[in-house]
Image 1 (cartoon, rainbow over the protein chains, first blue to last red):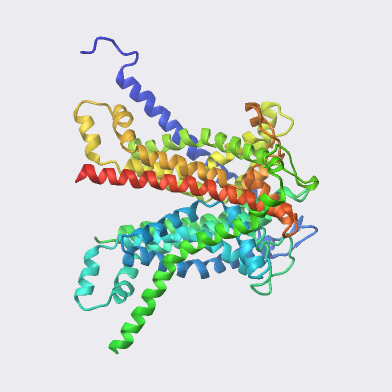
Image 2 (image 1 turned 180 degrees about the vertical axis):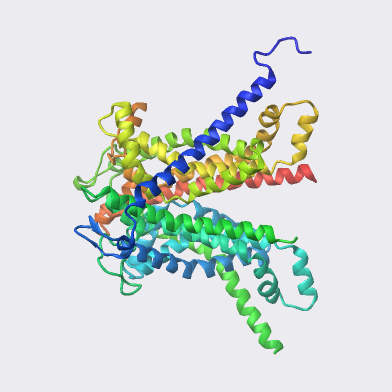
Length: 288
Length: 298
C-alpha cells in the first residue's frame, strides 16, 4: 500500500519530535529556576535583621522594609478574613446543596468571570465601591475587600474540588444514621476535605499577597515610615514597594531592590510550597 | 431540642446559599460600578475624539485606539511565545516524561504561576531590557517585545496547566488502540491524543491569552509606556502602552469625577467586556465537549 517512501523514517520522526518537545519543556522550566536562583543570589546579601526589621530612610535608599512586610501580612490576613468564610461556604453550596438548574449555572459563570477579570479592573472596582462609595478611604479595609473578591474564585474552585472528592457513600451513611445535612457536612465532609481546602485557601492568598494592581488605588501607600494604626489607615506593601523602588526612585541601590524582591518571593513561594506539601501529604494518607 | 436544631439548620443553609449567590452579586457590582463611572465618557468625549489615535489627556485628547493597539500587539507577541511552548510542555509532561520528571515539572510550572508579576517586571527592567537593547541595537530596551516575552512567561503556566489537564483526561484506551494498530508514540500524540483533547487545549490557549490581556504591572514596567498607535509590525521594537497600564499609571493622578477619570473607567469597562467574552466562550467550549464525551461514552 505504501508506494511512496516517506522522507523520514517514522522512528526518526519520533526521535526528532520528542527532542523538540523536551527542548520546549526545558525552555519553559529552566528560566524559572534561573530567575529564582538569581534573585536568591543577588538579594541574599541584602537580607539581614536590620533590613527585615528597620524602617526605610533616606528616601527609601537606606534602611529596612519592615513596614512593607508587615503591611503585606496585614493585607493577607484581611483578605483571608473575608474570602475564606465566603469562599468555603460558596464551595459547600455548589458541592452539597446546589440543584442542577439555571441559577447554579449562572453562579458557575460568575465564578469563571471573576477569575478572568484583570487585576487592575478589580482596582477600579475597589476604588469605586469601597474607597469612594462606602467612604472607607484608601485603607487596609478597602484593599483587603478588593483582594478578597479577587481571590474568591481560586478558593471556591479548589475547595469545591476537595469537597467533591469525598466519596458519596460517606454522606449516605451519615444521613442514614440520622444526621442532618448540615451535621453531615460539618462532621464528615468538611474534615475529610480539609487538606484540599487549606491548599486552595493558601493558593488564593498567595495570589493576593503578590498582587499590586488591585491595591494601587485602594490601600497602598508610597511611603509610610511607621506601621498603620488601624484598618482605616493606608499601608506599605511588598509588591507595591518593589514597584516603587524599581521604577519611581532614581539611583536606588540594587542591593535593596534585589533584597525586597527576595523577601517578596520568599513570602509568596513559601506559601506555595507549604500548600504543595499539605496537598501531597493528604494525597498519600488518603485511604479511599 | 428538635426545633432548635431545625432552626439552626435553616439559618446555616440560608447563609451557605447566600454565599453561593454572592458571586453573582459581585460580578454585577463590578460591572455596575464600571458602567456608572465609565459611561459618562460617552457624553463628555465626542466619539471622534474617543476613537482617535491620540491619547494625551492633559490636552483633552482621549483617543483609546493606541492603547487598544498596544494591548493587541503585546498580547499577540505573548501568545507567540506562550502557545507553542505551553502546549509543547504540556504534551511533554503528560505523554513523554517519566514519572519522576513529571513530579518535578508540574510544581515548577505552578511556581512560575505564583511568581508576582511585579517581580518579573523588575527583572525585565534590570536584566531583559538592557540585554535586548544591546542585542537588537535599539534606542531603548523598554519595548513591546520585552513586554511580550515576559507576558509570555505569565501566560505560560495557565496554558500548560489547563492543556495538561485536557491531555490527561483523554482515556487511556484511545492511546492503546492507536499503539495496537501499529502507530508510534509520536503518531499517537499527533493523530489521536491531541485531537481528542482539542477543546481543552483551545480553552487553555484562550485563558492564557485572557491572562495576558489583563496583566498590568509587568507591562507597565517594561513596555516604555508611550501611547503611540502601532501601525506596522515594526512597532514590536518600540515602546507601547496597553489599556491596563494606562489605568494603573494614571488613575492615581486624576481627580475623581473628571473626564479623564471617567475615561479610565471606560477603558476598564472595555477590559471587563473582553474578559467576559473570553471566559464565557472558553467555558462554553469545555461545556459542549463534556456533553459530547458523555454522549460518546453512554
